[in-house]
Amino acid sequence: MNIKDKLSTLPKKPGCYLMKDKDGKVIYVGKAIILKNRVNSYFRGAHDYKTSKLVSNIADFDYIVTRTEKEALILEYNLIKEHDPYYNVIFKDDKSYPYILLRDSKEPALEVIRLKKRSKKVNGRLFGPYPDVGAARNTIDIINKLYPTRKCNPIKKELCLYYHIGQCLGYCKYDIDEKECEEMRKEIISFLCGNTSSILNNLKEKMNEATEALDFENAAVYRDLINDIRISTSRQAVEINQKESFDVFNYDVLDGMISITGLFIRNGLLLGSDKFIDYLVGDSENFVSSYIYQYYQINPKPKTLYIPKELETYLSGLEDCEIKTVSKGKKYQLLKRAKDNSYETLRQNKDIVIGKSEYYNSIREELKRIFGKDIDRIELFDNSHTAGTNTVAAMVVYKDLKPSKKDYRLYKLEEGADDLKSMHEVLYRRYFRVLKDGLERPDLIIVDGGHNQIEVAKEVLSSLNMDISLCGLVKDDTHNTSFLMDDEFRRIDIEPDSKLFFFLANAQDEVHRFAISYHKKLRTKNTYKSVLDDIEGLGPKSRMKLLKKYKSISNLKTLEIEDLKTVLNEKTAIRLYNKLRNSDDKESD
Image (cartoon, rainbow, N blue to C red; front, side):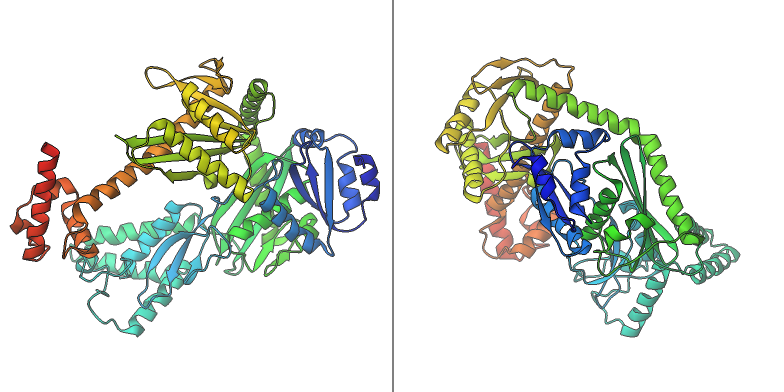
């Protein structure tokens, strides 16, 4: 059945639709209140730039009928996560905002956390989101100076510097009154909720007392704390009648591009904002509602969310959150502020986004010219070792020409193997796993090297009966990217000032960096293991004390037995001393 015939069979019911390319790959997922109207709209009239590109690549579509718009919203999210379609807005896993966590421990303790997944369990009370990590940490710094909170995690066994400067009650050594801790916790919660007037008045009194006593050093400390608190709160003030907590989302569209802005108000304070800009695909209501729904799968939902009226129906599936829209008053002014911010983001950044799009399109066209097909997913490999030891390999992945760090992989390889055997091992392990588990296949494999490395890669792919485009990145005598070599061992020269050359050089640097960092980590770990392990009486805690005090194995080798006895008992100190000396003898040989 062709597309025209399928369009006539679409029901007038809510649901989701999946657009597919000529290879059957899902390239876009959307939701609709009425499937027939929404899907047909793609094949009628003119569209903006990105939607036109989508339509030109649609070879087929499927649809799934749901009972309600709410079910369609949830299903759309799950289908996007499953298929990772090229044309959908994807709220990246690493795009989460910092929160302050007041832990549920006996002693008041604070930390900055990011919520990578909505289901992440937290033991304590969350405050935020904050615009960036710096703002959250500055707030914690202020609180830690105001209150003697617990700073260490896990709790230490001896008094630290914070106790001696009055910023800790010595929880590690003393039994602190629970009522005192609870009172401190309440005051911290009050501060994080924006109630700072009593604290400011108290600090002013202490500053004046210190000034009258000519204690100008402490007076300056109190003055700086007052200024820090004022700066922290003045930038966040929002003029609303009550100290409410809610989120606001709005958007604007300009020349085929869309910008979305979220404002996060907590207890009357504007803690932060979320800004997004990209090409618009489909209609704006579907686009924005999908973005907001994905945002709240990672971040905690507020009790109330204010949105423009046209989004109400599209977000009816957002549970545990009251959806509201207003047409006047201070909440409306915040909605307007979010829309104005979206317009400004478009005005200021539209040319940058267009420039990036042109940059990536140029690379796509060049890759298509070289390999005769569209290249979406690229997997690059590199090995690292020291004289055949601590041999590792790394794989980095680019999707739509952008690093997909969640797909990066590290491999610990057989010791003593040469570079070609190591290349054979990592490629076989990777693509045997792809076959076994039905993982997504790359459109292009890039190995670090020329003829020999490509020959090994071809052998692996042939043994697994896999047909994947392959090439090697060859370096010159100064170890810089020089040219491409295809799987027929033909040299493909690329202009050094071209966008493709710049992209490939950066990709080669990225996989090399990833491999080297793992190799160094493994080498350091094995160095510690070879010298400090297997010594009778030297357990993990003692090893940690030694490394904490003397910083490195090199420093340990300069010590005498008496020095080691400051951390270890005499017998263990002698054993370690002898082993360190023996290792020195072996190195000198």
